[in-house]
Length: 450
Image (spheres, helix red, strand yellow):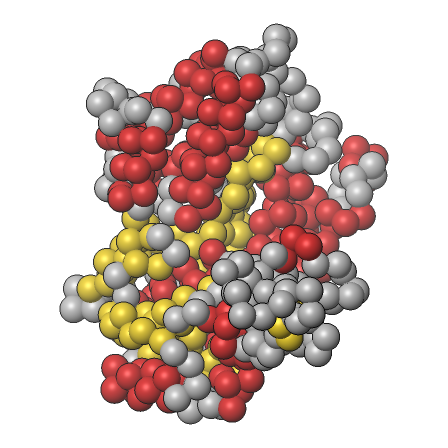
């Protein structure tokens, strides 16, 4: 292990980079796999960072402790291979792997350089540093590729995927579904925060309390701050990976991580109680009809809670995208500016969702599986839809930044299709506000958790 913290930029390293595939990208590809009845295999590269040549020819190490037959004042070790601990090791590994995959006729797609595709073999590879998920229709072809990779790298073939990035993967090609959940991780979190014996509850946040959460007027103790930040960190990983049902609650509480009060701590524990009762909830992607276009249909829903944050008067954006009958991308985020109307708040939310839609479309386009004329995005605000399609409210909307009118260009080009939907059918509602029990159950049904 090298002491990378002693490296100097420009002298001991130039660039640092880690090949970390985005959550949405691998979920989208896993969903694509189930719609096409493809196999998903996993391999683990052994000591990956030591399998690449060093990119600087003058990098030296001091002799390690315990070496007695060499005078450390007279000799240094010159590095030929990368080592764990160096700032550039992850980058060196990525380009080492990249060059091998290019040699094996793979190409990295432009929209996500951790996704490689070989169109001849019809194989897709998702790269997360040294964990590779290999997706394709034929297991013999996949195993042949793994054998080819083993000629270049030390690796372990883990067979059909059972987990990925700490997420449990239940792949059932016969029944046509793949389920992602984090039951084991949730159990560890509950144990860590002494909530294993807590009483389950039906919703992650009390709708009446959510609007009353304000900054702590007093100073919390250092131990309390550390405890609360550890809790938020643990919950954020769940939120990003599989548990979009707690996204709003966690994001809401994260705003108070620097100085939590007893109310914030109680709200955090409520989320743990909710997780205790829903530990097996997870995302499910499944096929409906063989070779039906509906299997490849992708859509998005966007919503905003106008001035929902009483402390800042800012609105909350929420969006969710579905593919293969399950959610592949979602977000709950406080808007960066203060919207002056519900129309403006919803318009900003539509703009945010549109940028994600373009990214999703780019991935599917490059893989060759975008099979619809327009990308539908549903909103329950007519004012925002009219503003996007036709600038009719000039006097009341001229203050809106030009960057938010990006959506108009996409509509004119026929890329995005904005569609009105009744508020009762808004699937992103649970990402913008805390819902009471009946509405929350509807939200869970919409995202496929019930």
